[in-house]
Image 1 (tube, rainbow, N blue to C red):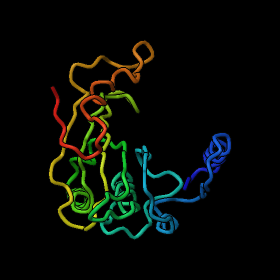
Image 2 (cartoon, rainbow, N blue to C red):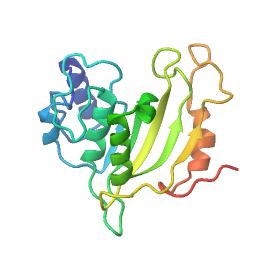
Image 3 (cartoon, rainbow, N blue to C red):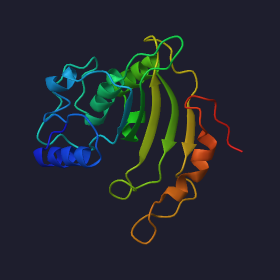
Image 4 (cartoon, rainbow, N blue to C red):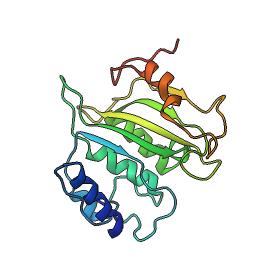
Length: 197
């Protein structure tokens, strides 16, 4: 679902050019329309940061908040297919600002709900300022939906890419090469215990 008509049009063209079947609905994911979307196997997203332009949070989430990032996080883990005793459920990798990890009140409740319903197994702390203005701190949260709604997160592996990094920009672009050590440590198993040598 996409809020901006022009962006939706670009998305539909991209799907067509890559021969991908699917639909991209026009609407506000954080409204009642978003609750009509089905359950999914995989979510890879960078939800919008900042204030709600063109559409606020009007959806009836379990934990009410005007913070768009926290509302999107509820939408994402709520949209993942349930796991079973033999197989993990839907998986997600989501880019979110630091405030999602530390905000109190609704933020605390939403994080607790996420960790009960999903195995939040990895937090990748990205270098400062690579997505937005210099100084904005972002993370990638990796989680998998569990078979029940309680105690799915046992351990969280935090990989910090902020320490000893250059200032990124036009002269020093943030390239795939910076992810090599993380990829090596992460390995092939999406929920294994991580060890950094």
